[in-house]
Length: 213
View 1 (tube, rainbow, N blue to C red):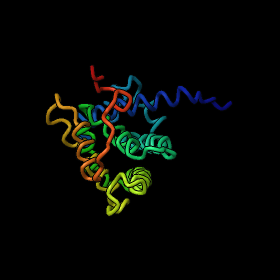
View 2 (view 1 turned 45 degrees about the vertical axis):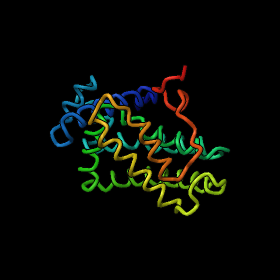
View 3 (view 1 turned 90 degrees about the horizontal axis):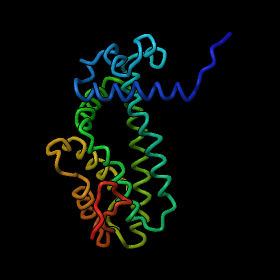
View 4 (view 1 turned 30 degrees about the vertical axis):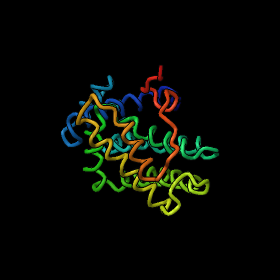
């Protein structure tokens, strides 16, 4: 009789593996991390690990595959916005928020090292980039139509540059752990887009922001 798969437990175990792997990859690098170490960190046997993932590259890809659904949900949330400027800044803040995690720089470095060696990983990254770029470009066009952003900017190119700025936030977030990168990131984006009426950061936009007295 075939074994019935508990989908929730299956999903939880996979998440435990990817969470453990992300920690180890960021700390020790992809090449120096073994599947035995990942299994031990996740609290399962090595045999169980290979039930959920065929190999170490598949685990690494799964870490970033999660971004696709998250990015799609984020952009869908703002697709019908009446305030594209607020939505642009909310999207930028949400995409950059994980850069606060001390693992972020190390994990991104490993992504840059591995993406050229794994075509499937490249497809994952490209898919997520396309979702984000297309979503941002649509918001930029809407902001320009409302005369709230520089109409001379090419929306697709500007969206690509915003993505590059967000990526740089991840690379440099570990330079000073006491500095929150999001306020400066939002300022850079507003200046780049020629936005004059950007809303201030609120606790709703940024969970770490403090309310004004």
